[in-house]
Image (cartoon, rainbow, N blue to C red; front, side, top):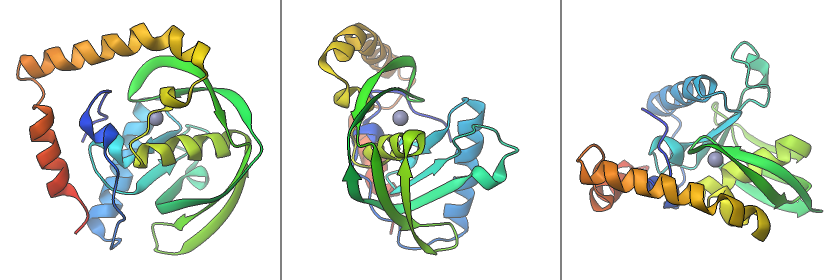
Length: 191
Ligand code: ZN
């Protein structure tokens, strides 16, 4: 398992709900936390490891020893959004790229944890921002699409670099074609 970079087709995929929390899911969650910590991130969505599952993990401290801060969101729904706030975001699928994004200031999110327990959380500040960012991944939405026009203009050349790098890797056969990746994604959907 590895973190895929934009414009990998998994990042454009609308993920499907997980039907059963089994060893496979628990194993994936553990690996996702490890990859997230290695990459110095605070959140990681299943799409970002090439899995079309409605799942993301979060640890706002980014510290692997802070196990109490680890949160797993399975089949999440944002059921309420309040207010609006601009703030800087980055993404492990677009390393070293940052920009201002407007998000709801406060959200209520529902979902299931790794024990299959339903939960509801009211979040603000960084937690609300991060959950909205990861939730977007599950819908196939990238954070730069929500950037302010000015911020987006600034980062457009960098995005273009990511695209040409990815296409070059496909031409060299280091990465499968979009069509092949899409076939894989359909096979990986929750059964
Ligand atoms: Zn991201």
